[in-house]
Length: 595
Ligand code: GDP
Image (cartoon, rainbow, N blue to C red; front, top):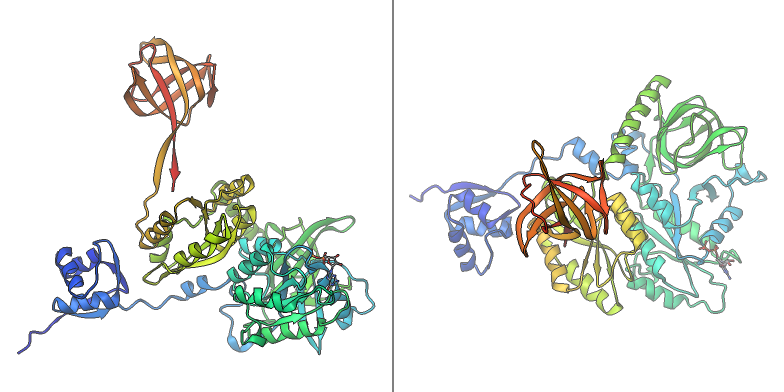
């Protein structure tokens, strides 16, 4: 009788070592079994279920996948984009289609503002006809009885600022490309931003009236960006328009509505209102005024709302023509009065039950705000992508890649794009030629991406912003090092490398002996700066005699100081070392991370 085989539960991915542990076998045996199946693997290498199952089977086990627990409601909730959270948990039968919210992106001077003006002038909603147009950050137009909301601040900066605050302002992006100029760097950036937000793109091929317009060339460039026009069998709607002659404006609106029909754009108007702040300011005679985009529910005069750190009862509400209205439904932009301070663009707002609840929530937000101010936001780093993956927080490593010359763009992108480790994949959000700029950092910050530079550096503005928002920038000069880092990151085996950098050197000129406190090195800074928060090593006759000492005090005369510059004297006390001699060098160094 055949011996009953023991069931071995195997997860989707595990290392060779883990598999050996599961079977109580030695990793060498597992590696041998792998080799006999034509697979070369190292001890720490991740293998997938199928591979592990072959080994387990070969070693006499009955392999079975470990059943992953069903995601909890909370986990499903957390995985939703911000705007869907607004109506998640709603009874599906109560959800209704709402007008799409559209943002206009594209290269400077390609006609974003002109197009927004042309659309507004051609199609103001009926209620607004004859009214005075107010610029409130968004407006609605009507075509064949259907409404579209346009965000009136063109460009991806505003859009990205919203996203980095957790708000998803738009459902559809109109990418404006001038037919006489074609795809430009910002066009590519805009595409990356829209894709990062998973927002479908409609292309407005603008300035079609110009004699130098070359739509076919631009369509080819768009196809190269994976935006192949439907005329060529792709699924991107590319609409020729002119903001000046108004040609094609209706076609563009129709294209937007077509895309909207294919996209989940719902809300439950019966709920208390929630949405995003488009603008906040102090208006003379009216106090704090805010423009809100209602994204779910219905906002009514008299409602109590909180918006970021502002709160209050809606005293007055106005539509885009300045007309007083009593209520505003999903996708409608409105201006309200009654808040105690102007909120910030990009803040989320919501209607709450009472002034008391509003106060409590604002207090909570204020504390969160204070906490996030002192602690930089949790950034994604190459080192932690694997643990995030294990924790179910990440499925892919998002990268923004900048290279020095066009010739390296494709090889770099292709080689990282193919890297995969089990379920964890690489997705290149944006790749271009040139130094790493603030725009790249903003995109990375809004999308939880890591920036990789190949033979390029981050400019100083980019470095500053990256530090303050906690975006990781890594630069490489050798392509295989770059690939290796990404590979190791996906395997969870990337160790940070630190290097010590000397920031200052002091020479001991006099040893001051204090009976109880120990010896102080009366020193003279020869080069750089002696820093209180650095580490120190003591060098005597070319030999390091003590290392990694903390500086327990650094004084100029009797005063404690944080640093002392070249050519100044100071008193230095180190932790765990006081056997100074005249002529000793005290080297101050900081530990810095290198790739
Ligand atoms: P933005 O920087 O993308 O907002 O571009 P603007 O809307 O400011 O337009 C830049 C320039 O292009 C302006 O001088 C516009 O008059 C011009 N322009 C915009 N759209 C068109 C168009 O469809 N046809 C022509 N001929 N010129 C246009």
